[in-house]
Length: 207
Figure 1 (cartoon, helix red, strand yellow):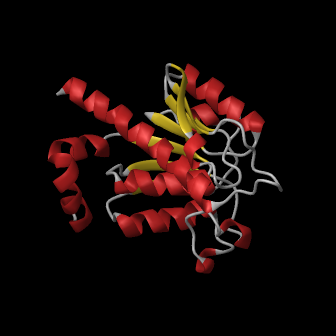
Figure 2 (cartoon, helix red, strand yellow):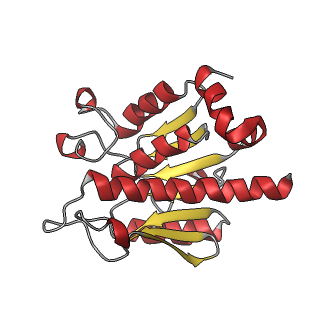
């Protein structure tokens, strides 16, 4: 147990922390939602993550995504892996610099216990929900993250067993409502909280 994990046991206890190490979380998309959610998950004690994203860090990402200016031009998943292991060196991060699609999704995330939907494209969102919930995975997505001043309207909605969506469920990210750090970061934190609570419930049931 390293220094970070030793400090975390003060809040979680060794038993629950050990359980979280056995849980594998898939994160599809390493942008505003995915990068920030991953950071929250690692800070909560999850160490086994698989990240998938085909993009590189761009200057326009830095207003809301968990990257630094020095990482511009690098693959997002590789930069994020470095940032996560800087928090907890024991984190085992599989970084997949690729497009996730209908052909490879099931195999890439076959060993994941839960999947974070953190993409912009509606078709890919739909695919993640269809494929991963059908495979019996908890899917935590997001909808309605644009703009600012909407903190009070952000909610967690259980659409059906195995599918949870966070956000205000209305406001798109567009020119009138740009993606900004507060709302995007809040949604990412809500996603991580749903996952932490889900596995805490499982842990208590097994205890």
